[in-house]
Image (cartoon, rainbow, N blue to C red):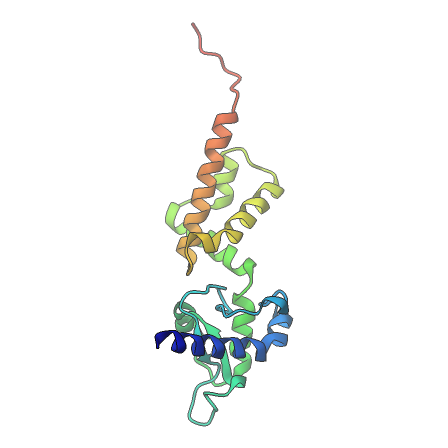
Length: 182
């Protein structure tokens, strides 16, 4: 019996994605329409995703597809409580990009470890922008392996893990110019 309820919920989520697919493509939230699946439109998590009204209030059709978007529970809490749909769409566009989450993770990293990601890389001898970009791409593509639902803190931890791996690799490959006096 529960299987049928889950199937109905998934169908409802898919119908919302299908309804908004063109808008999601325009905003850059959806990469292509071939892989339509229910995920949080802000953080791209698949955990705890549900229909959320874009604009809530007694005069709006809360159940209509035109007033629905998909968010996880964490993003639902941060969604602006506005009676104007444009405000919600702007928030979604601004905060759903990989760039936004990278900046937020780096800010959180600095709060937790009292140094920036870039300073950590500088300290281990990485000064090439391509290596920084590789680090960011690795963390952002592996974020769903970290946790099905992620946040700033989990991304900051992912940066820490990758930087520690890079530090170990740099230390293992280091050939010092100083010889121990014997």
